[in-house]
Image (cartoon, rainbow, N blue to C red):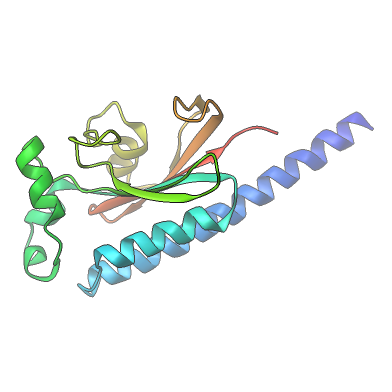
Length: 178
């Protein structure tokens, strides 16, 4: 009886994570298409991230971390209308830009840019110590982090990340536990 309950619980978690993974891959595919067609905007990025965080209450946050080289290649600077990455580059010497949407403890959504190192949420996400970015961009395969305790929420979480070419990493944090 106990083993059956454990097996059912495992299947339930597996199915739930499968749904989250599938949804995140759809969003990553839409972002890739918008990048390929040179029509991705700041507003669309935040809409995609808000959609991902709103999809399931267990998703605490999502980000789209762009590779600094994304803004330096070809004609990106001509079609990407935002100057946010330029401002961030003056602060950190890298063209960091990572729109970020998170769920507050009151279940309200908020937004920021973790590429802005002058903000309280900002940091250099391209530093190899940040697995969600470095392992995913290097392997060009979706990755999970191991469980960790969030310093912001005090809850155990895992992070799932999907590469978008060598241009960006779409990542979301999920509550981990019962």
